[in-house]
Picture 1: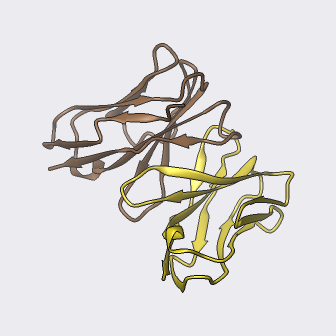
Picture 2: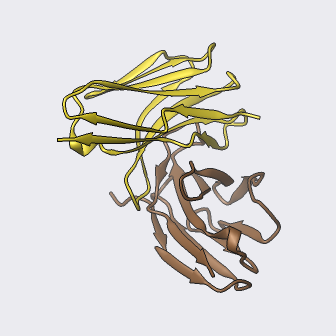
Length: 112
Length: 114
């Protein structure tokens, strides 16, 4: 059974700092990995999707990497801002390609 | 264009009542997913539709949970004889293809069972 783990569970940083969020998964047979952002009381917003054949994806200040063989992904956020404060969720597709398996998330707080 | 919408946004039910939660996906999206998110946890998969066909319902926790998408667009998640452990946020997502494509999530329905 696929399990997704995110470390740390919570992170507080001052504005301007670069940071890395970690995600690991137990079964390397995935179609893709996605990073989402969730603001309190709201749904999820997709940030980046990395196909299983890719190594990384970039969008603005965000960069996500994927090492499928070791079951790891990282989300790098450059020059963090208070508006980046949210919970970040990592998810991998199941083998059937019919669902996403989520981690519990990392709650990020960026102080000004 | 319009995103995924869900209604109601909040629902309070007494234990034993039946509830129905609605999801309107993005127009033209073939795939629709339901997830359950307990407080402090990541979403957990419930069921998946491709058009009107329910191709995966392996995540439904019991036979009290039932989902349908009769015309391949709007979907309804029904929970019969609600119990306190059903209290959670129910999220709906849609995508152009399956989970291999980006999923777009609605705001969720927060269900509280008293």
